[in-house]
Length: 254
Image 1 (cartoon, rainbow, N blue to C red):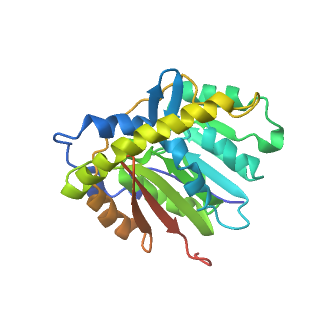
Image 2: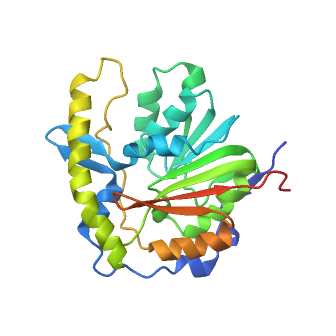
């Protein structure tokens, strides 16, 4: 039987909790990390835009998955529909109730388990999950939380973080400017897709909105801290004020 591990202070290096407060972070970053834009009554979710990219990180033969900060459960349901035994946790009781309601009509084998839990305090089974995802949720907690998520990965498992970062450099601002027309184009594409979406398809994001927090960690700080806690991980800058951090746990890790 696998013993649980607790995500607590002993797993989180205090120096990684002291990220500087944002000074002049753009409103676009905060709005972008909300994950949603609106065109009339048509929702556009920046996180949904990267679902396919995240699904490509799922390792072959994946049997178990955890979505941390699962929100209303859209990505967790995508994992479960692949036949993966999926758990979702979120610190917001309201969005967990929405996730459960949205999943109630699915076949049991395609229905994730949702739990109201704070990821920094939750107990997770040791080396249990083949895949762990965090979609725009890591900036709500100390970055050091990834140490416990790493420990919850089975050997050969993958941790994929779609994260938000604070803008500070000229490169950050250039990517932010590039995101503006891309954002408008993506919204129009969503509007067109929603107009022809067949009945019974996955609807747009529910009206429930999870609490939003500005990211305080810069991309370089993410790179530096990941190098310590997730050695061998890769970091990729993305449009819409995001990055993709991927860590593959070595097979045979004790």
